[in-house]
Length: 534
Image (cartoon, rainbow, N blue to C red; front, side, top):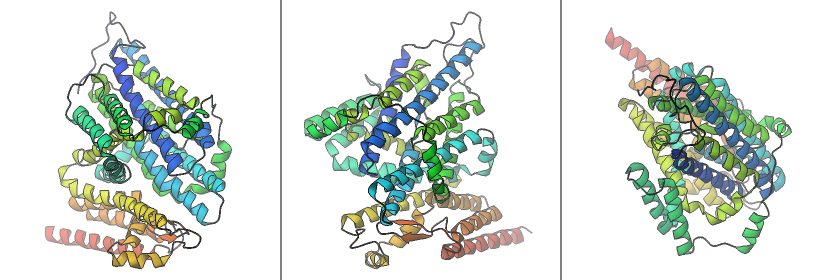
C-alpha cells in the first residue's frame, strides 16, 4: 500500500486548482454528462415523462445532489490535506450511479407506469405514480447507504462477494451492456469507431492527446454529423430551447409521502441496490487508500448517502455514488479542483435546463461506448475480485439479470406486435405459442420478479456449496422459499400490457416448494459429508 509522506511544516499544502485538475475534470464531467443524457433519453423515450417533470424537477434535483457530493468531497480532501501538510490529495470521484439508473428505470419506474395504465389510469396519473416509485427507491437507497456507514463491516462479513458482484454484473450485462451493444451494431460506423477509441484508451492504455472519453465523444459527434445520424430538427430544437432557464428545485416531501405504498413491492430492488452502492463505495475507498489517500470510511459513506437523500427529497429518482477509478484520476494529476468544478458546472447546467440542447448536439451514440465499457468492467470485476473457485457462483448469479432483460424484450416485442392493447390484452394465451417456439416466457417472467434477490441467493448458495458449507446453503434456500411463498420472489401475474409482482400468502407456492427441495438436498449433502468424515 502506498502511504502518504509524513507532514512537513515546509509543505505547500493543498490548492483549490492545479494543472492536472483540467484533465480530471474533463474525464469526470464526461462521465456525468453521459449519465444525465441517459436520464433525459430514458425518461423521455422509455418512461414517456413530460419535459416539465424532467427539466423542471428531476434534473434540478440531480444537479443539487452533484453539487452537494462533489463539494463535500472537495472540502474533505482540502481539510485532510491541510492537516497533513500535503498537496497531493485527490478528492474522491463522485456522480450518478449508472447501474441504479438502469435498475430503477427498468425494474421499478417502467413496471409501475405500465401497471397503472393497465388498471385504467390516465397517462398523467401513471407518470406521477411511476415518478413517486422512483423517489421511494432512491430514498431507500440513500437510507441504506447512510445507515450502512455504521454497520458496513458486518455486511461485508455476511454477504459473499460473489453474490453481490455477480448480481450487479447480470444487470450490467443485460440492461446496460447488451442493450448498448445492440444499439452499437444498429449504428455501426459511429458505434464501433467510438468503441474502438474506448478500448484503446482504457484497456490498451495508449497515450492520447486528449482524455480517452472526451476523444471518443468528439469522434462520435464528428461521425454522427458526417453519416447523417445527427440531424437537428427545428421543432425539437425549439422544444429543447424552451426548457432553458432557471429551474430551482423544491422539496418533494409530499410526493414521497404519497408514494409510500410503493415501498414494500420494490424492496427486492431497492435493498440489494442500496447494499451494492454501499459495498461498492467501500471498495472504492479501499482503492483510494491503496493509491495513498486514506479517507475516513464513515464520513465518506455518509456523504454519499446524504447526496442520494438530497436527490430524492428534491425530486430525483437516481442515486449517486463514489466512482471507481480514484487511482486513475490521481495518476493524471487531478487533486481537488476537478471535483468541485464538476459539481458546480454539472449542477448549473441541470438547473438551467441546457441538457436538452446538449443531447441534440451530442447524440447518445457518441458516448454509449463509455457506458458499454462500464458494463464490461463491472462484469469482469465480478470474476476478478472473487476467488477463482467461486467463478461458477458468479456465472450462476449472472443469469437472473439476463433473464429479466430477456423478459423485458419479450414483452416489448409483444407490445410492438399489437398485444397489450385494450383489444388484445396480455394473458395466458400468449405463453403457449412462445413455448412451442422454445421461448419459455413463463420462466423469464418468474425470474424477472425479484431478480436481484434471486441472483444474490443463488450465487450465495453455490458459494457455500463450493466451500462445503451446506447448512449455510440450506439457509439461503429457505430464505428464497419464504420470499417465494409470500410472493416477493417469482410470483407474477399478467396485467393488460405487462407482467408484475403478485404478492400474497401462498402466491409463489410452486417456487417455494422448489427452494424447499433445494434446502433438503443441501441438508442431505451436509449429513453425507459429516458421515464420510466420521
